[in-house]
Image (cartoon, rainbow, N blue to C red; front, side):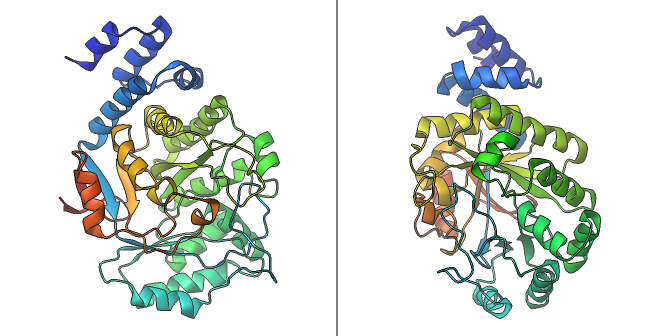
Length: 370
């Protein structure tokens, strides 16, 4: 039975039925319609719709890559209320040197295709410091894709060097930056941003940095931090701003919903949302972001089992094998305290739910299928 016929037969409101048919017909839904899905649609309905979109875009494929995470420092100028990671100079933070980071890469498996570099916004490190790191990585491993620095880090390092945004972006490209991750977006509503991360790069500037990078051929990912003090409308409005930017640049590879974790931070009184809410959020993200090619479940944060479940709710990317080095979410109480997976473990989790495991490079070229 076709999905459209199923929609006509199921017992839902006329409003939901109209939205569901619109989605089935590949028509873009509005912010208001997105909020209706969050509030009134059950998990089975949004899961069914998201899965159809996922399979229309990517078939049965589930992507992963062989990557290495490096966190240069957890010393940070910002005091985000949800953060369980950052420290100030003189405290119990860490500062890896360029040589230490290069040694980590040098010892990594030759099969690694990407190094992912994200950390705190260090007050003394500018664009030239990190540009030198990129150049040294390229000398050591010329074919290694460098996906590095959130827009928040880039904002600071460019300003510290006294450069304009366009000058900084071109310089990063010259240094050899290949792509950037999607962190630092948090929630775009400025009132909420002022409440949970008041000193951080503004929403407008985060989007401007990604747009500038896209314009010079550097792709990126995008994120949302959900499950704290935001409403469903805040989530929908956040995704709308991403969708509009993607309409202009087509520079985003993937969207990654990041779940708020409440341990060891100043928002610990907030209860974490349920697994049902996690899956619903993945599904609605897939439905709303019609121009994003991929939705990623970041398994070191939500755990391997939930990430595996998400493959039936719009998700088609499992991130990477990592290497037990990322602490950003483990310190906040993530499900995976020692995040690392072999290729075989990754493929087994994917194929166990009837999906095809596809090893990819950082821009989704196929390396190998299983």
